[in-house]
Length: 204
Image (cartoon, rainbow, N blue to C red):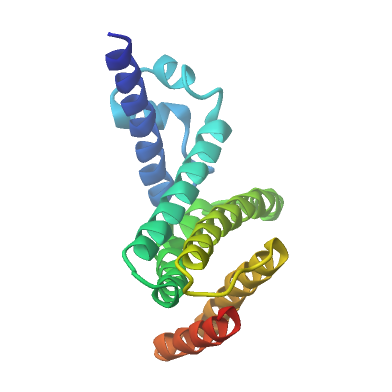
């Protein structure tokens, strides 16, 4: 009985976040009220307040959910690959793909914000970014540890793991940013292949 109630609560919480996400995409965060969310899911505002204190808390929960979704997508793409070289390549390509697929959401969220609100929002987004970086780091650490166990690559110190993970994360962010500025992703696969090859040469 308790399990059934718990599952029902989880489903309602998920409905709230899904509805809020869709509303943010259409109208931006600033225009979406708790009333809008309650109407979208066909429940009273009281049922939403049971899970979230205010609309800011709903927004933060949506962002946290998004981070988990992106990290899961990257992790799943890597898990499908048999070797560390293919896992690193999958990490780079999936990180760019998921980042681009979420871009319309983050652009829409800022709709109607003034300069001060955008400044506050950028601080929130920096926290979200750090959470994602931590999630990605755990995924890459797992892949490297498994590869060492299988003797695909040489043993690495904690510092060496941290360094190569930082290089991969920052490199792919830089690659994405530069290609975005040029509005040209034609050389993405080749660029990622070179980055992956360089990384593997250092790892072995």
